[in-house]
Image (spheres, rainbow, N blue to C red):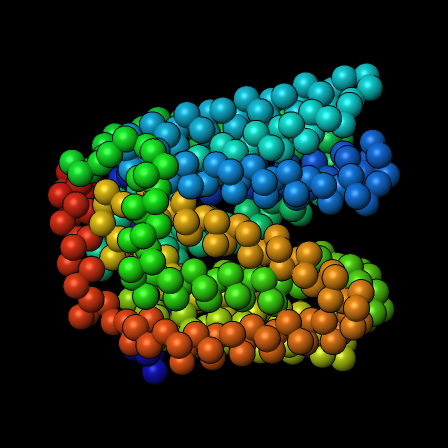
Length: 429
C-alpha cells in the first residue's frame, strides 16, 4: 500500500537543474504579485467609476492586446535569446506597474492610465509568454518534462490562491497604492532571478521574425493532428464550460454570498491537489487520450456544479473541475514540449497562447449571454454537457490525437536533441 502511495508523490527531479530552480523562483514571485494587481485594478476602477461596464472593459483591452502580440512574440522567441526576451519583458512590466503606483498616489487618480497599463502589460505578456514556454525543454531532459509542467502549475496555483487573498486585504486595509507597491517589489525580485539564468540562444535553424515565418509555424501545427487536438480541446472546454463570470450569481442563488471567495479559489485548489500528487503522471504515455478523458470530466464536473443543490456540493464539483483541468493542461504541455522542434517552439507557443487566452475570455461572455437567455443553472449545466459532447466528437474525428503515444511518436525524437545539448552544462550543477 505504502509503495503505491509513493507513486503519488510529486516528482521533484527538475529541481536538480539550476536554471529550472531560478525560473521557478522567478515565476512564483511574479505570479503572486500579478494576482495582487489583478485584484487591485478592477477594485480601483470600481472606486473611480462605479461602473460595471468600465470594470469589464479591462478584460476586453487585455484580450485584444494579447491576441495582437502573442503570435509575434512566438516569432521573436524562435529568433533571439529567449532569456533576454523574458528578462526585458519582465523589467518593462515592472515599469508599467510602477506607473499604476504613481497614478494611485496622486491626489486625484485618473482612470485612463489603468486601461493603458492593462493593455501594455497584456502586450508584454503576449511577447514574453512564448519565450517563457519555449524555455522549459532547454532546461530539463525529456523524461522530466511532465514533472516540470506539474511544478510550474504549482506556481500558478499558489499565485491564484494566495495572490487574490493578499490583494483583497491590501486594497481594503492598506489601500490600492500598497497593492501596486508590493507588485513592483515582486517584479524586481523576479528580474533578479531571471538575470542569473544562462543565455538560451536560438536554434541554428532560427529565422528572422516575419509574417511568413508565423505562417510556416501555423502550417506545421496544422500538419500535426495531436497538436490540433490539444488546441481544439482547450478552446472547446474553456469556451463551452467556463462559469467564472457567473460565480456571484451562483453564490446568490445558493444563499451563500459569504462563499464567493471560496468559489474563486476552488478550482486552483483542485489543480494544486493534482500537482502535489503528480508522481503518477510520468507513467502515463497515451497523452492525447489523457487530455480527452480529463477534458470530458471537466465538462461533467461543470455540469454538476450548475446542478448543485447547495454551496458545499458546488465547491466539491469546482475542486473536481480544477483537478481535471490541471490533468488536461499537464499533458497538453507535455505534448508541446516533447514533440515540437526547437526552432518552431516559440511560434507554436504563440498559437498555444491564443488557444488558452481566447477560450476563457470568450467563454465568460458566452456563459453570461446564455444565462440571460435560458437561466443561470441551465446555462452552466448545458455548457458542461456541450463541452463533454465536443470532446467526444474530437475523440471520434481525430483518431491521431486519441492514439498519440509518446513512446512511438517520431516527433518526440526530432525534438529531443536540442533540449539535451542545451541541458548538459546545466544538469551538472
